[in-house]
Amino acid sequence: MDRNQNYRKKTGEFYTPSPVVDFMIERVFNQLITSKRVELINYQKFTESLSMLRFCDPSIGTGNFILGLLKWIWNVLKSYTKYDGKLKTDFFYRFVKSNIYGVELNSSTLEICKARISKTYSIFQGESFVNLKCGNSIIDVDAKDMFSSTQTSKMNPFSWEESFSDINLFDVIIGNPPYFNLKKIETRTEDSQLLFDYLKTSNQWKHLFRASSDIYYFFIMKSLSLLKNDGIVSLITPNYWIENQYADLLRSEVLRYQILEIINLEGIKVFKDESRWLNVSTCILTVQKSSPNRNFKFVEKLSKNFFKLKKSSRILSKHLSINPSELSSTKWILSQYLSTIKEISNNSEFDKLGDIAKIAQGLSPGVKDVFVLNQHELEINNIEEEVLVPFITNRHIQRWLISKKKDLKAILPSRIIELSEYPNTQKYLTKNKSLLMMGPDRKRLMENNKIRWFDYSVYRNLSTFKESQTKIMCPYRSLLPRFSLDKERHFGATDIYAIVPKDEEDTLAILGILNSSFTNFWFREAGKKKGKMLEFFSFPLKGIPIPSKGERTKISKYVKQILSILNQVDEKDETQISIIEEELNSELTQIYGLKHDFLMKYTIKNK
Image (cartoon, rainbow, N blue to C red; front, side, top):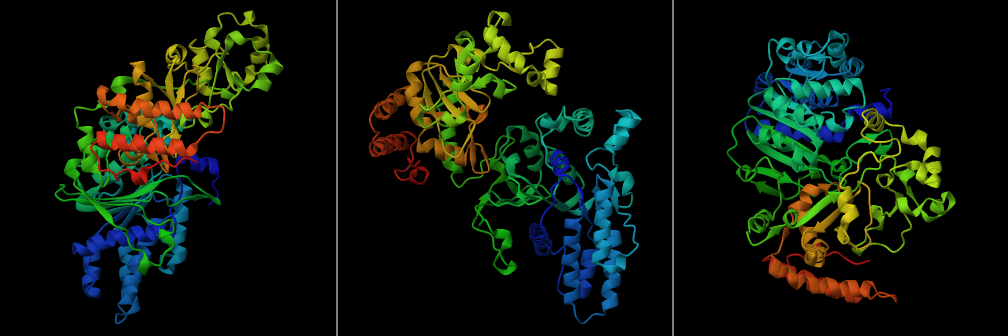
């Protein structure tokens, strides 16, 4: 397959390894066999039951799932050794021609799939595979009424009803849809803009559209719509949809049906691009098109080499039994501590962090390398002090206090009315003007007179950073809770968040809670994660339950002691800090009504 990495990255095309394909097919057939839709008693029962089922892959790629299906079926046929080989071959040929369907966007990729089938099974030499078609699975022919003929041709719309007039509903849909975020690609290419506009305005999708959706959301929903009653869909996708706030409409759609299982592959590397493992956390979602009437399995914490294990020993770890009636369109909390989390969330004695503090993302310079300078660069260019502000990146944010090993300052163009009044800054920025004029976003903002050529792209939350003498800062992603007290009016870019309590007296208490084992527990079980990283974005931060005003005063004393030790000029006593943190965690355990040893496994070790 001659595809360069950039193309695959834009289209989200990364093909599923055979061990994963085989596992998913095995799980689906287990479901079919358990429900007696496939019977293995004898050859007659098997072929008769299988002939009743139609299989489809809505994003074929080079055919890994189709070849996996054919391998599973052929191996079962071969196991009936008493039957004539030609009888089995003839059945297999008829079955593949009439019961296997699929759609692929790229015509050359589809031809690769067909060639692979023919090469694997010689009986298909010269076969056209009329049920494997080229088109865009989620763009229907209504696109012709919405766009020009040239634009429509680029979109490659596909009508499931017209293309498969004999059968437009399926018993099993299985595959690996493409992954890419619609908002991120919105302005990159004409093709991606057309896709965005279609999904936003089409009667089929507009009621399910979110600008920040991922394309695979629509593949999941389309697959559900193409199932017969009691049909099964099984797709491997990123696991982000389970908790992403912009996947609320997808979650609502999925909850209309019976979820059979969600297997979380967190920590297992599944996809490769060339020889490089991709950092994509995935899950396998399996849903039956029937009304939800029972719990479903949620499986996680599988071994890293799960797919390398022999089939006989590749068993699933312990699973949680999840009652779908306890889930809604909001973030799904699939945790063994769900009852505890709900009890704390619903406790009216607790505030939410978003109610007692402002939470603000850092500024968006656009070209950070130009605006942010170290001490050496500042001296070389002799930048005027009046246009500078102290600046930190997420690496400067430690637990409790910002690192003293920082030497960054940022030019803040909002302080500049006339650039000529600051000749050294003007000379420096002019030298970098070509960089500041680059990029479609900056060009568009300048063309619309939103910014000057030397401005930041977005002055997000500028007043918060300018006016807040005291705030708490954190990185937007971190392996552990990492919150710093800031009393020097530091600025930061979009990779940091600032938390400004409405009552400054709450600052130390909030800092203590955020750096505690409780917050570590809360974000791992009820917060937001991407892979192993905790995501301290605005939305999940706002939802952290905070003890009442009276209880907060109990926490401040521990934080004062920790800060006092950390501010000492001499060597810090890490042991003493650990003891105080343990006392803090013990206090919070009582405040939140948890068992004494509940948070032990979430303790944050000082290094």
